[in-house]
Image (cartoon, rainbow, N blue to C red; front, side, top):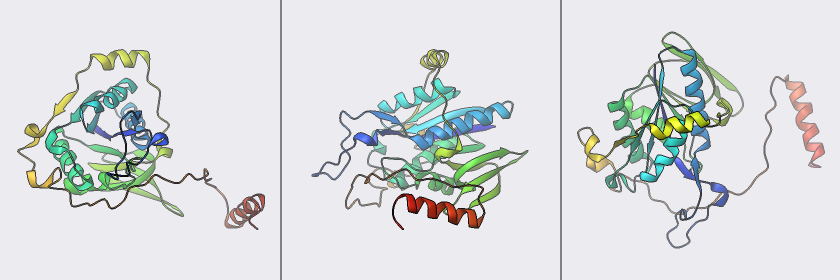
Length: 263
Protein backbone atom coordinates (compact mmCIF):
# COMPACT_ATOMS: atom_id res chain seq x y z
CA UNK A 1 0.00 0.00 0.00
CA UNK A 2 1.29 3.43 -0.94
CA UNK A 3 0.38 5.79 1.89
CA UNK A 4 0.68 9.57 1.52
CA UNK A 5 0.60 11.97 4.47
CA UNK A 6 0.05 15.65 3.69
CA UNK A 7 1.52 17.92 6.35
CA UNK A 8 1.83 21.65 6.89
CA UNK A 9 4.50 23.63 8.70
CA UNK A 10 2.67 26.13 10.89
CA UNK A 11 3.65 28.80 13.42
CA UNK A 12 3.39 27.79 17.07
CA UNK A 13 0.03 29.44 17.70
CA UNK A 14 0.81 29.99 21.38
CA UNK A 15 2.97 32.86 20.18
CA UNK A 16 1.03 34.12 17.15
CA UNK A 17 -0.02 37.76 16.73
CA UNK A 18 -1.94 39.54 13.98
CA UNK A 19 -0.45 42.45 12.03
CA UNK A 20 -3.09 45.22 12.39
CA UNK A 21 -2.07 46.83 9.08
CA UNK A 22 -2.04 43.77 6.80
CA UNK A 23 -4.52 41.68 8.84
CA UNK A 24 -2.25 38.64 8.46
CA UNK A 25 -0.27 36.43 10.81
CA UNK A 26 3.11 37.77 11.96
CA UNK A 27 5.47 34.91 11.13
CA UNK A 28 8.85 36.61 11.56
CA UNK A 29 10.74 35.17 14.51
CA UNK A 30 7.93 32.74 15.38
CA UNK A 31 8.92 29.09 15.99
CA UNK A 32 7.38 26.63 13.55
CA UNK A 33 6.06 23.11 14.10
CA UNK A 34 4.32 20.34 12.18
CA UNK A 35 0.59 20.90 12.44
CA UNK A 36 -0.55 18.67 15.36
CA UNK A 37 -3.39 16.88 13.51
CA UNK A 38 -0.98 16.17 10.63
CA UNK A 39 1.43 14.60 13.09
CA UNK A 40 -1.30 12.22 14.23
CA UNK A 41 -1.77 11.35 10.56
CA UNK A 42 1.94 10.52 10.30
CA UNK A 43 1.70 8.16 13.25
CA UNK A 44 -1.44 6.47 11.90
CA UNK A 45 0.31 5.96 8.54
CA UNK A 46 3.40 4.46 10.16
CA UNK A 47 1.22 2.16 12.28
CA UNK A 48 -0.65 0.96 9.18
CA UNK A 49 2.66 0.37 7.37
CA UNK A 50 3.61 -2.00 10.18
CA UNK A 51 0.38 -3.96 9.74
CA UNK A 52 0.39 -4.17 5.93
CA UNK A 53 3.55 -5.78 4.45
CA UNK A 54 5.14 -3.92 1.57
CA UNK A 55 3.60 -0.57 2.47
CA UNK A 56 5.45 2.73 2.23
CA UNK A 57 4.81 6.16 3.74
CA UNK A 58 5.55 9.31 1.76
CA UNK A 59 5.19 12.68 3.45
CA UNK A 60 4.20 15.68 1.30
CA UNK A 61 4.17 19.38 2.15
CA UNK A 62 3.44 22.53 0.17
CA UNK A 63 5.27 25.64 1.24
CA UNK A 64 8.46 27.70 1.00
CA UNK A 65 11.89 26.02 1.09
CA UNK A 66 11.87 26.31 4.91
CA UNK A 67 9.14 23.65 5.01
CA UNK A 68 11.94 21.13 4.43
CA UNK A 69 12.45 21.26 8.21
CA UNK A 70 9.03 19.72 8.79
CA UNK A 71 9.68 17.06 6.17
CA UNK A 72 13.01 16.16 7.81
CA UNK A 73 11.23 15.76 11.13
CA UNK A 74 8.68 13.43 9.52
CA UNK A 75 11.49 11.39 7.97
CA UNK A 76 13.13 11.22 11.40
CA UNK A 77 9.91 9.72 12.76
CA UNK A 78 10.19 6.93 10.21
CA UNK A 79 8.59 8.04 6.93
CA UNK A 80 10.20 6.50 3.86
CA UNK A 81 10.53 9.56 1.62
CA UNK A 82 9.40 13.16 1.30
CA UNK A 83 8.20 15.60 -1.35
CA UNK A 84 8.20 19.40 -1.10
CA UNK A 85 5.78 21.26 -3.38
CA UNK A 86 7.26 24.73 -3.70
CA UNK A 87 7.29 27.54 -6.25
CA UNK A 88 6.74 31.29 -6.48
CA UNK A 89 3.75 30.67 -8.73
CA UNK A 90 2.00 28.98 -5.79
CA UNK A 91 2.31 32.03 -3.51
CA UNK A 92 -0.92 33.58 -2.25
CA UNK A 93 -2.97 30.41 -2.76
CA UNK A 94 -6.10 30.06 -0.65
CA UNK A 95 -7.46 26.65 0.34
CA UNK A 96 -9.02 26.02 -3.07
CA UNK A 97 -5.83 26.81 -4.98
CA UNK A 98 -3.70 24.95 -2.44
CA UNK A 99 -5.80 21.80 -2.72
CA UNK A 100 -5.68 22.05 -6.51
CA UNK A 101 -1.87 22.14 -6.46
CA UNK A 102 -1.51 19.32 -3.92
CA UNK A 103 -3.99 17.11 -5.80
CA UNK A 104 -2.01 17.63 -9.01
CA UNK A 105 1.17 16.56 -7.23
CA UNK A 106 -0.49 13.49 -5.72
CA UNK A 107 -1.65 12.38 -9.16
CA UNK A 108 1.99 12.40 -10.22
CA UNK A 109 3.24 10.66 -7.06
CA UNK A 110 0.53 7.98 -6.94
CA UNK A 111 -1.34 6.76 -3.86
CA UNK A 112 -3.61 4.17 -2.30
CA UNK A 113 -4.39 6.04 0.91
CA UNK A 114 -4.01 9.73 1.77
CA UNK A 115 -3.92 11.21 5.26
CA UNK A 116 -4.35 14.89 6.03
CA UNK A 117 -4.90 16.58 9.35
CA UNK A 118 -8.44 17.62 10.23
CA UNK A 119 -7.38 21.27 10.06
CA UNK A 120 -4.34 23.51 10.41
CA UNK A 121 -3.99 25.52 13.60
CA UNK A 122 -3.02 28.69 11.70
CA UNK A 123 -6.12 28.75 9.52
CA UNK A 124 -8.67 26.42 11.14
CA UNK A 125 -10.64 26.02 7.89
CA UNK A 126 -10.65 22.18 7.70
CA UNK A 127 -11.09 22.60 3.94
CA UNK A 128 -7.90 21.43 2.22
CA UNK A 129 -8.19 17.70 2.98
CA UNK A 130 -11.77 17.29 1.69
CA UNK A 131 -11.01 19.53 -1.29
CA UNK A 132 -8.06 17.31 -2.28
CA UNK A 133 -10.36 14.28 -2.25
CA UNK A 134 -12.89 16.11 -4.45
CA UNK A 135 -10.20 17.08 -6.96
CA UNK A 136 -9.00 13.45 -7.09
CA UNK A 137 -12.52 12.00 -7.25
CA UNK A 138 -11.97 9.61 -4.34
CA UNK A 139 -14.07 8.91 -1.21
CA UNK A 140 -13.19 10.71 2.00
CA UNK A 141 -13.89 10.35 5.71
CA UNK A 142 -13.19 13.26 8.05
CA UNK A 143 -12.57 13.37 11.82
CA UNK A 144 -11.17 9.83 11.89
CA UNK A 145 -10.41 8.45 15.36
CA UNK A 146 -9.78 4.75 14.65
CA UNK A 147 -8.76 2.63 11.63
CA UNK A 148 -9.06 -1.11 10.95
CA UNK A 149 -7.54 -2.31 7.64
CA UNK A 150 -9.30 -4.89 5.46
CA UNK A 151 -8.36 -6.48 2.12
CA UNK A 152 -9.36 -3.63 -0.20
CA UNK A 153 -10.96 -1.22 2.25
CA UNK A 154 -10.74 0.36 5.69
CA UNK A 155 -13.22 0.39 8.56
CA UNK A 156 -12.97 3.75 10.31
CA UNK A 157 -14.53 5.32 13.36
CA UNK A 158 -15.58 8.89 12.65
CA UNK A 159 -16.04 11.30 15.53
CA UNK A 160 -19.25 13.29 15.25
CA UNK A 161 -20.68 16.05 17.43
CA UNK A 162 -22.87 13.80 19.57
CA UNK A 163 -22.07 10.28 18.38
CA UNK A 164 -19.69 8.12 16.34
CA UNK A 165 -20.04 6.77 12.80
CA UNK A 166 -18.43 3.43 11.90
CA UNK A 167 -17.86 3.39 8.15
CA UNK A 168 -16.31 1.07 5.60
CA UNK A 169 -14.52 2.96 2.83
CA UNK A 170 -12.91 1.46 -0.26
CA UNK A 171 -9.37 2.26 -1.35
CA UNK A 172 -8.11 4.59 -2.69
CA UNK A 173 -9.48 7.13 -0.24
CA UNK A 174 -8.59 10.13 1.90
CA UNK A 175 -8.89 10.35 5.69
CA UNK A 176 -8.56 13.47 7.83
CA UNK A 177 -6.96 12.74 11.19
CA UNK A 178 -7.82 14.17 14.58
CA UNK A 179 -5.52 14.24 17.59
CA UNK A 180 -7.22 11.20 19.15
CA UNK A 181 -6.35 9.00 16.17
CA UNK A 182 -2.75 8.34 17.25
CA UNK A 183 -0.14 9.61 19.68
CA UNK A 184 2.86 10.67 17.55
CA UNK A 185 6.12 8.86 18.24
CA UNK A 186 9.32 10.72 19.02
CA UNK A 187 12.19 11.08 16.61
CA UNK A 188 15.07 8.67 17.20
CA UNK A 189 18.80 9.27 16.86
CA UNK A 190 18.94 6.64 14.12
CA UNK A 191 15.94 8.24 12.43
CA UNK A 192 17.56 11.70 12.51
CA UNK A 193 20.75 10.32 10.94
CA UNK A 194 18.79 8.47 8.24
CA UNK A 195 16.64 11.54 7.52
CA UNK A 196 19.71 13.70 7.07
CA UNK A 197 20.97 11.33 4.38
CA UNK A 198 17.69 11.18 2.45
CA UNK A 199 17.01 13.51 -0.46
CA UNK A 200 13.78 15.46 -0.49
CA UNK A 201 12.15 15.58 -3.91
CA UNK A 202 11.13 19.08 -5.05
CA UNK A 203 8.03 19.53 -7.21
CA UNK A 204 7.88 23.09 -8.57
CA UNK A 205 5.53 24.68 -11.07
CA UNK A 206 7.43 23.28 -14.03
CA UNK A 207 7.05 19.75 -12.66
CA UNK A 208 3.27 20.19 -12.45
CA UNK A 209 2.61 22.58 -15.37
CA UNK A 210 1.25 19.78 -17.58
CA UNK A 211 -1.55 19.05 -15.10
CA UNK A 212 -2.16 22.56 -13.71
CA UNK A 213 -4.10 25.48 -15.13
CA UNK A 214 -2.22 28.67 -14.12
CA UNK A 215 -5.58 30.40 -13.66
CA UNK A 216 -6.44 28.05 -10.78
CA UNK A 217 -3.37 28.61 -8.59
CA UNK A 218 -1.78 31.44 -6.64
CA UNK A 219 -3.66 34.70 -6.21
CA UNK A 220 -5.38 34.32 -9.60
CA UNK A 221 -6.94 31.04 -8.55
CA UNK A 222 -7.91 32.17 -5.05
CA UNK A 223 -11.47 33.51 -4.76
CA UNK A 224 -11.24 33.89 -0.97
CA UNK A 225 -11.08 37.40 0.48
CA UNK A 226 -9.96 37.68 4.12
CA UNK A 227 -12.02 40.38 5.83
CA UNK A 228 -10.46 40.03 9.27
CA UNK A 229 -8.03 37.68 11.03
CA UNK A 230 -7.92 37.17 14.78
CA UNK A 231 -6.45 34.78 17.30
CA UNK A 232 -8.51 32.24 19.22
CA UNK A 233 -9.80 33.13 22.63
CA UNK A 234 -8.40 30.74 25.26
CA UNK A 235 -10.81 28.20 26.68
CA UNK A 236 -10.56 25.40 29.21
CA UNK A 237 -9.93 21.81 28.18
CA UNK A 238 -13.14 19.87 27.58
CA UNK A 239 -13.89 16.29 28.66
CA UNK A 240 -15.35 13.38 26.68
CA UNK A 241 -17.47 10.91 28.65
CA UNK A 242 -17.58 7.47 27.03
CA UNK A 243 -19.38 4.21 27.75
CA UNK A 244 -22.15 5.74 29.86
CA UNK A 245 -25.86 5.05 29.77
CA UNK A 246 -28.19 8.02 29.27
CA UNK A 247 -28.93 8.21 33.01
CA UNK A 248 -25.24 7.93 33.93
CA UNK A 249 -24.37 10.65 31.43
CA UNK A 250 -26.98 12.98 32.92
CA UNK A 251 -25.68 12.33 36.45
CA UNK A 252 -22.07 12.93 35.35
CA UNK A 253 -22.94 16.20 33.58
CA UNK A 254 -25.00 17.47 36.52
CA UNK A 255 -22.12 16.62 38.89
CA UNK A 256 -19.74 18.70 36.74
CA UNK A 257 -22.18 21.60 36.70
CA UNK A 258 -22.52 21.45 40.49
CA UNK A 259 -18.73 21.39 40.87
CA UNK A 260 -18.50 24.55 38.75
CA UNK A 261 -21.35 26.19 40.75
CA UNK A 262 -23.37 26.62 37.56
CA UNK A 263 -26.49 24.97 39.01
